[in-house]
Image 1: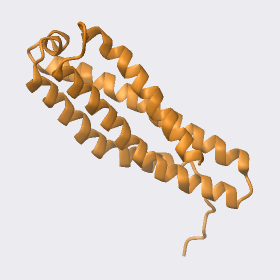
Image 2: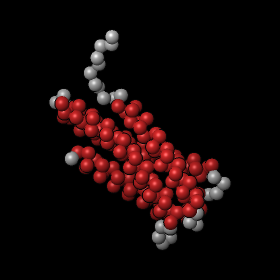
Image 3: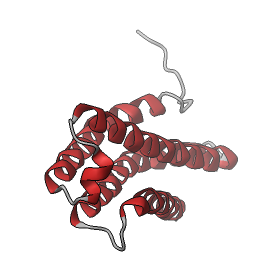
Image 4: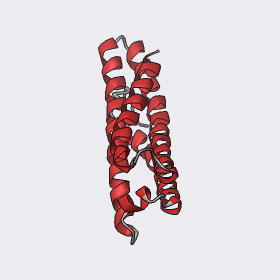
Length: 152
C-alpha cells in the first residue's frame, strides 16, 4: 500500500512537472516530436521508479521487522523523493547535453516536429536509465543499516 501511494505520487508529480516543461512547445497542442520526448521522459522516470521501489520494499520490510516503523516510512519516503529528484535532474541534464551535442537548436527542432531528434533523445534517456538506475539503487542500499556479520 505504501509503495502504491508513493509510486502514484512519484509519477503524478513527475508528469505534472514535465507537462509544464513541455508546455512551451505546444502551439496549440503537442506535436509528435514533443510527445516522443515527453513519453520517453515518463518511461525513464518509470524505470528509475521500478528500481527504487524494489529497494524501498526491502528497506521497509527490514525496518518493520526491527520494529522501527518511523524509519520504515522515513526510508521509503526518502528513497522515492531522492529518485524523483534524480529523475528530474537526469532529464534536464540529458536534455541540455543532447542539445549541446547536436548542431540543431533542440527547442526549435522539437517545435518544428523533428522526430529524428526526438527519437535520438528518447533512446538516450531510456538506455541511460537502464544503466544508471541499478547502480544508483546499489549506492542507496548501502544506507540501510543491516547488521554486520563477523568476517572469517
